[in-house]
Image 1 (cartoon, helix red, strand yellow):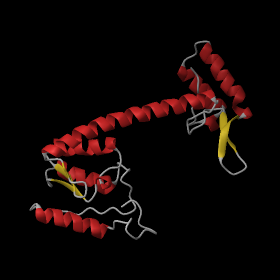
Image 2 (cartoon, one colour):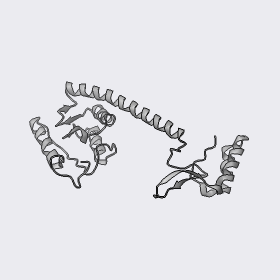
Image 3 (cartoon, one colour):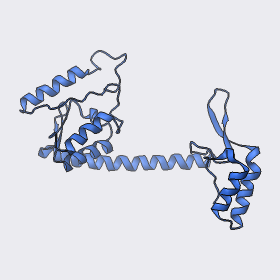
Image 4 (cartoon, helix red, strand yellow):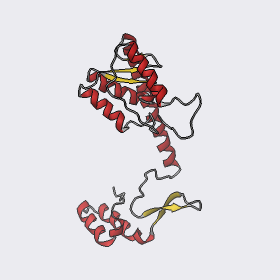
Length: 212
């Protein structure tokens, strides 16, 4: 369940309603529910949900024959994540069933749906790669440094609203950084440069030094 607080009405499918749907399906198909996993305030977009991983691992150990969810978006939100989970289940000889979506990975239609899901996942990955590449190119053209950690010799500008802006040079470090670049250009080893910086500006330890 992604969010609990402040949600009610028809748009909110409570854990109790989901459980009833799963129980009804299990009774109809003569399936025994061995364990219930209930994660509240946990988005289906999060691949590393602890209980989700435990449920997959239980199937991989052969303790459970599969996973039943009320809706497929409770299993995963993206085609990429769904396909990865389904692949782990298939390799373990387990099945995934989504009651409302009428999805059963053990049936011919279920396997067909997995094939379609694979194509969608590949398309989604390509779209993400293209979007990221375009975002990086745009940032570089605007002179924006995209890493969260400023390189050695720079810090993030603090804006009036308290947010962090672009890079500003730390003048107290400038001479040391310039000397590191000069030494590298003359062929000095990384080890020697690191020793020099350790002695001269220990306070920049842990930051990235962009010396190429």
